[in-house]
Image 1 (cartoon, rainbow, N blue to C red):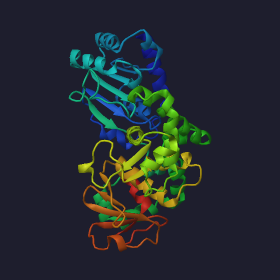
Image 2: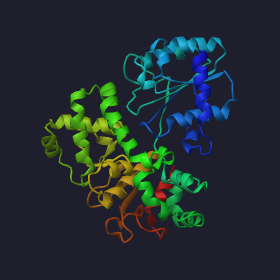
Image 3: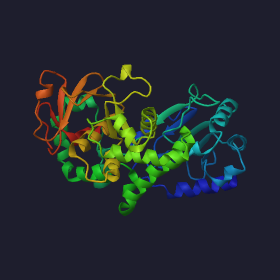
Image 4: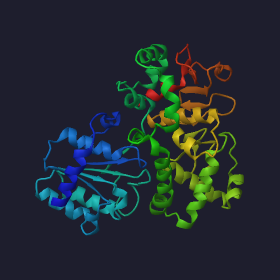
Length: 401
């Protein structure tokens, strides 16, 4: 245990408290068993360490942070570690990278049942399934999905100002006033193009020069390591998944031909749909459907986008089509804020939001023809910094979380 506490102190001494993400306040830290999921690189470890540093005094041994991929756990179990920690008076145990521990679900269930006063927080891959395997934790564990940083958070990092998030309903009702408030502090369009290319993962502010290569490494790690481990994908098939991803990154969203895509990489149609589902679960792509209420397992999506615009720019072999960039940004921000997004179809607005709003995404000159008869129809317009009636700047939707 002494070795774990030494490493715990080292981690806390290096974490910065300069900026704490709003996601911190979305978590009910009083729950006995919490899981924070998310793709590698979105800041899960930093968030956990910041929570510890802001809650406990330095040197407090009632709390312990450790990583499940530490060499310590090659000869020690999670259960034994928790037992020893509790005997020493420990009350809060934080375990990072839980998906790298083979029997994590069984041992967490045992820890939960044995130690009624121990609070446990774990972090893991987006592919982690708490209701799968020998130990179903769904009734014990509270689960949160952590996204990358929003455009609002990017502006906070880049400018040093603190901008508050706004709800979608308030934004649609008060868009002009809200835009004016932001413009009094900075010029959002000055920062927006850079965010689209390299602002989603917070490590951008650590080393801008290696950002693209680090994002590529994350994608390769997910496909080469996490998918085989978490979804039983054979290692020999990961190259085909990468080929599929390369095709998707160059797709025009409304041109989806699953049979053609399958033939081009030499796999069956159902296998293609399975891989698409895996990539979406891993937060690399986003599949959209016209009606989520009637969507079946392995159903062909009506539209496929990358999960965020950074992936689109980095994985595309050519500059992505601007319409695809706009739609990818819009869906990324809305989904990360917890909204339900459905494909609007080719004759109406691009997206249906929460079964209530119809939103068309386009350039500054985009007209209302497709949504003119819908009282809850709006345009998310690029290349503008002012809202006019139901036409709202696209970048403003980056303030929802």
